[in-house]
Image: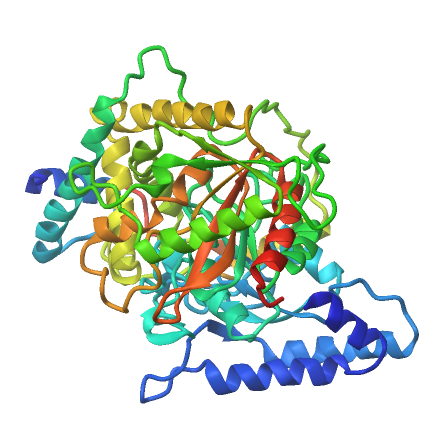
Amino acid sequence: MLSKQDVEHVAKLARIELNEQEKKKYQEQLGKVLDYFDKLKKVKTDGIETADGGTRGLKNVWREDENKTQDTINKTQDLIKMAPEKKDGQIKVKSVF
Amino acid sequence: MIKELHQKLINKKVSATELIQEYLDRIKKSDPVKSDGAGLNAFITVTDKDAMVQAKDIDNRITKGEKLPILAGIPASIKDVIMTQGVQTTAGSKILEKYIAPYDATLVRKLKDQGMIMLGKNNCDEFAMGSSNENSGYGPVKNPYDKTRVSGGSSGGSAVSVADNLSVYSIGTDTGGSVRQPAAFCGVVGLKPTYGAVSRYGLIAMASSLDQAGVLASSVEDVKIVFDVIKGRDTFDSTSIEIKRNKKEIKGNNLKNLKIGIPKEYFTRLDSARQVSGIDKEIEDSVKNAIKKCEELGAEIVEVSLPHTEYALAVYYIIMPAEVSANLARYDGIRYGQKEKAKNLFEVYSKSRAKYLGEEVKRRIMLGTYILSAGYYDAYYKKAQQVRTLIKKDFEDVFQKIDLLITPTTPHSAFKLGEKINDPLTMYLEDVFTVPVNVAGLPAISLPCGKTKNNLPIGMQLIGSWMSEEVLFGVGEVLEKGLGNKG
């Protein structure tokens, strides 16, 4: 079982509002799944490298920045169209502070 | 099926318009969920108007005597986690309801260049999270063999689409088994390529070190034809690679000179102490029967061991939610998706996500956030990534001695709707044979190899070494004939 504070802390980090019922449910469910992970304690991993995430021999493939073309400007506008709130070709957000 | 249809089209035995109309009629009849609950629900969006326009275009090209690529005019469907320009793309989630993709995924563009006609977007578990397609924001998908049972997931709609001939092939995604498991549950062929073989550009990301687009179709040949189009290095996905030609060739109609490994850990019976999900006897018998067939066809069968198999599920369920928690942070009501009314910016995030994300998605985000949070990172995430290295090494060692592995695809056949939805861990155990493949980045294919006494499909899994898709296809085709699978 996770503590209620743990669940509330994680929910805050994850930016997901939970009601009291959900907090109880996650305390139990997450606790059970985390208990399952205890089996990894049996594996000796001293000196073992962490996996490289699926691809070997990665190298930097960044290119130089290029100036905008009309095509990229159009594409930008296509993307902004999908925002729930926009104004003057910009995405609208509540103030951060 | 693709080659035959292609011949029919170019020889004008059937027009593309007739063909597409036939498929659309079938979808209309079998798919929509009606008031009595009937309906497979394999599609979230059906693009019938666009499909008919594309069909007319193909017919014009045929009339003009143009030489057409093999996939031209062939009806396909795409899992709804893949971006298709101008078409609603929901990822099976309410948070993206009415979201219109502004661009095509690279694999979609490649298929369109070959004249693919897309019939629609397949239903899936929300953000590809699930093993039954019961986590969709748009209703569960039913198994055509028994509509009280699940299709499997997360590419449930894709598998059902092919199984019920609502599309000739479908593109799904596989992060922990999401192409192979529903393929097994629905009696179709499902390929998860080597990690990097197919560009992930345009895939709505779930777990970036594990995700891979895959192909579902009714025969190995069809899967191969589609894979050959979508594979390849893409500048928009720096983890994508070219699949180099494999030296091992499967010649003739036999499996001589092939060494097949049978990993003993995949044939364990239910062991509640170690919490390994044992396989049903029917599945074990069916897969062992197929292995015997391989031996008859000339293959050498070798028992092997993958000692860290029992840890793969834990490794997967640590790494995957961690990556999910990062990848789904973008669904915050700002740039796209549904947005809830709120007093301040924090609440825009927390209320929008609370309202529009489904239960399993929230669960995995929470789990991943916890795993990556200060104080727990070393114990969980770092440990899991170290064990991941050991799992990969198990496979590297074993592939020194054998050419491919055979295992069951799933521990059970399709379970009943609602049967496993209340216990997340029980559901996660359904992935026990498929996740090690994603953890290691290997290619694997699920082939139908029999039915249970309830007439439910059983799938066997062929796992190849990195970049050995051609071996999988070669063996798969020989086995298909040997087992008498209908093409």
